[in-house]
Image (cartoon, rainbow, N blue to C red; front, side, top):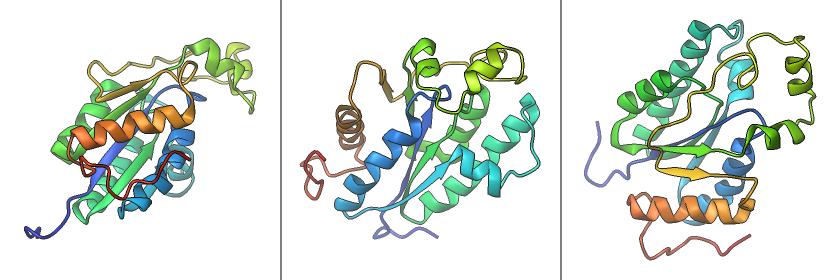
Length: 191
């Protein structure tokens, strides 16, 4: 049960293609939020798949199940005053909309949106190369669709914006939404 003195958490949902910079932005935001006195947890898509969604494949149904599980955990944490940073491709708009419906007004969608070509250039694991060669089936952005958000609260093209500037953009939006104090008190200076 929530009391009036209980500080609400929030879910910052970073969505975008593999290699877009979701995890990089989320991890860079953590120390700033903690510097503002916030409790913070990161739910990274790769880590969640290993621990919470082991055994799920990459069919649409399995992807939607994975996102539903992440949303469930994120909602529990946010209800208890935690700011949850979800960094997951979450390619399907409907699954993200379901997450927003579950979490409610404390859901902040952040579309990390460099061009596909930039994601391919950043591909340190060689996944895009394998997907383009047909060695990986159902790879988002190559052989599987990515449905861009229609009205995200934040959109960042990480091919044009530095990590620091992207984090500042997110912080500014969090102030506008009331997640962070509007005067910026407690938020650390640029890293």
